Image (cartoon, rainbow, N blue to C red):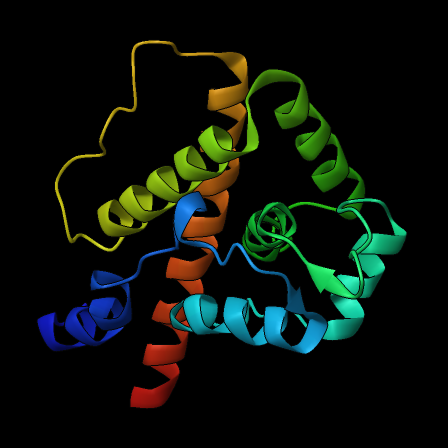
Length: 171
């Protein structure tokens, strides 16, 4: 692949960053606001946005709790950001299993921030913006390995789609 093409493919990824748990709004967001908020972060990845009907479906499927007074909390937004990323490689049943596993093993702020760091580091590694993937601690648990596998699958899909889109532009 030509260096110019690689630069175009990785341009959006170089500055990609998901909000950490403490940066997610602590005030509730209405459905449309929540979808717009998540879309602002996920646009560089491609088609990873969530629609209001998708979010409502996730509530019906008990992937996230029902909104309180039609507003989505910080916890719900964190889950939705994870779902928006992982839904492209996992079924809804697998997403539900993943969320239950997280709830049994790690507090949401810790698990969500770990997900964000893993995702960003793997993106930068896959897009050749860094030579190493950071290690997030000595405790290599089965849960962390499963999350890393999920993140790697998403990152590979993002990379493949961006490469194919760029090749199609050149043809």
